[in-house]
Length: 315
Image 1 (tube, rainbow, N blue to C red):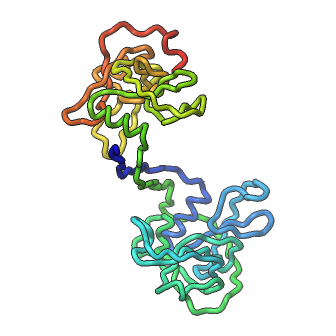
Image 2 (image 1 turned 90 degrees about the horizontal axis):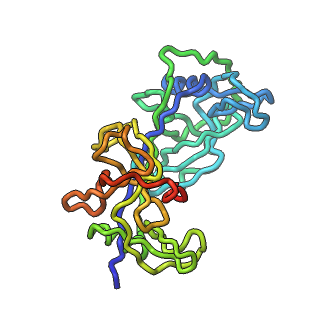
Image 3 (image 1 turned 90 degrees about the vertical axis):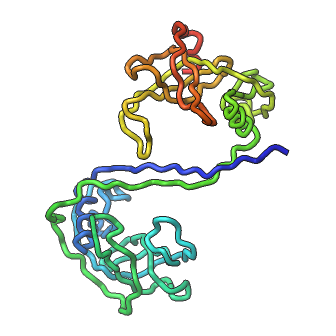
């Protein structure tokens, strides 16, 4: 039986966004231990605040201050906290309607166990000791022995010294990848500096990388076909933003390459040529590093450019 391949993979990127006046005031307020909401034209107080009424789509910006205490409206226990979650010990995810608000805020509750959590319990904000203008300025909620109160929201200008203008939100997905039969054969061939695809028995197209089934006909594929290693650049882009932890200096070119004998273009980096000289139709070949299990990049072969009609269906 062939080896079943698997590998841990991480997809991660920082998402950077600028803030409008409403979100800027909300996050800056958290830094100053102040919770702001926004009043809609219907009189509802939304916390966290949004810039447009979710019901009428009307632009809103009437900011108000609400209390740092509230009531749990629903919850779920998390017995095994994951990396970078707010607390390192078991906790409850909670929706908390702060006193003075009409909507609930999602955060975490520090509690000794699920038996200590209930819908309707009173809680209050535990502020982080070091605050920067982010939702994590609320370290968590904690139980608070008090009766439910009717707190009247107080108007707030939303003005603070040194307001927060933008945030960086990390996005990360950790998972284990199992490539399956077709992808395993493809990866094993790459380790031997060969490129293998699969041919559809119906339309006779060769797909690289193979998927185990024809994406057009929907039938299983199992006839393996070696293609390339040379190919043609069908389209490309110039990358000007350096990726985190990447050793490649910008600018560089990432391209779709139609390998000879394949009916699907794969993507790879182009090297060995100035970025502003890469073009559609450029003939390229793979460059393998010592011990590498896949091509490091593709470089020009020196052949004349391919005629557009030979690759136009793969653009």
